[in-house]
Length: 378
Ligand SMILES: *Cc1c(COP(=O)(O)O)cnc(C)c1O
Image 1 (cartoon, rainbow, N blue to C red):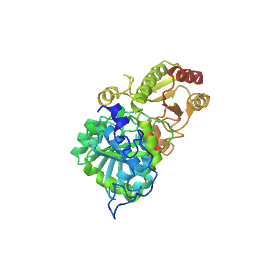
Image 2 (cartoon, rainbow, N blue to C red):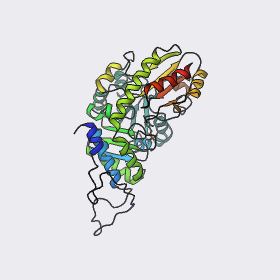
Image 3 (cartoon, rainbow, N blue to C red):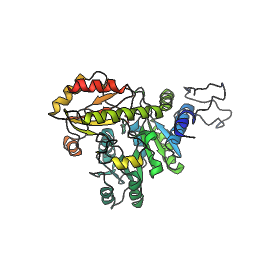
Image 4 (cartoon, rainbow, N blue to C red):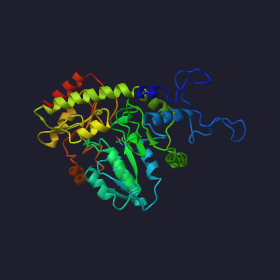
């Protein structure tokens, strides 16, 4: 079965008891047993729920993984993986991670005893150097947020495995439609399903997908023991969003490429960052490991950083909002919004200057998006 077909059918056959074509939302918190411990696979909804199971099966299929576990948010999914480690274990990552991931590592897991090391640039050589002392996990995002740097996943998997570390890839920005890290050697994929997978900015969720079933054992145990599970309605909304992932991603990408190309020529614009432009330093690797470049574009304007705030306030079709990956276009200022939890010095070193604008290009008509940006820039 191909991607678009899996997105609509895996885990969701017609309901055997009623024939309902669309998966029911199973709200029941408990399940009636025929005899003690004799049941149809479900006993209590924290441990397992039929709507959640359908979502997990579909996610595993789309990421070409062995199994998936759904969580109440992307950060809950990240916590599940980090909780597999012991105090004293090392994680090698980059400062180019989602601001909330950085906060989770620094404010929760470092005090708990995890050693966290940040590789300043995203070259494979730099990772190799930092892995000399070994590590339990290598944790990356690609494209990164919000600088959209590209990390060569096949090469990184080799280097990580050479150091006996497992590779975790946050695939939120690309979505499984454009990038499948497990096929490139990753051991864990995580998602904030809040973004492209859900796709409509109406549900918060997360997921862990593992390359091998063995790796799922600890995650599954943690999911039940710690309990940060999504509700059945959230699972259902996410699944409904996922059915149109393919066609949405195609439009996100074609709109983003068009907007990025036009912004590049605009006199008020100093720099456009989009991995689908051949001037992007990661263009060739992105072309090799992704089947498309997704819908995120970052822009630096000429002039001072206050101009960026003025432009954001003048937008009418774009909403000034955090988050990304929904059908509607969003614009934000990472330094003040999504990445405010990263210290200013670290931010500036990463290129997240105060005037950097991050655009999540939606699936509206591209001319309406361009007219909106044009009037806000002028
Ligand atoms: C939003 C996001 C997260 C966190 O997910 P939540 O669902 O908000 O908890 C993690 N990684 C990336 C890349 C994100 O964009």
